[in-house]
Image (cartoon, rainbow, N blue to C red):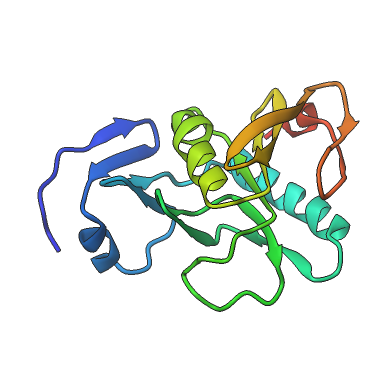
Length: 182
């Protein structure tokens, strides 16, 4: 489908106004999300990939039986379809492009080009979808949110250089500063 559109370039992130039907017609494409009439394309940088890999290992090792870590898999929410960097969810989810099964935990590894999405639209979408826990990992800190009746409330912030155990359903010892070197 060749449709000329205005787009907004934000570094490596591109945002294109598009209907849900147009977005679905694109088929499977990596690193894309759709919400409220906008297609978001944000390929990760090297730092992001390495952090996701390391954090996925830590979380997977700490998961209780019946749960697993899903990197870069889609989640359908009432506010849009997103591809969280990491989801912790039941290990027997149906094989769909965008699951409708609510994960226990979502982790977003923030980038400067999508910070507004992670801290606003995704925060609201994941809370309304019933996700119990949401972590936002930035270069200098990890912020942990718990879902309180459809809204996230911050429960913990772990600063770089000050390793702590995470609160919530899965406990790992983490120092966001250890991820600073690419």
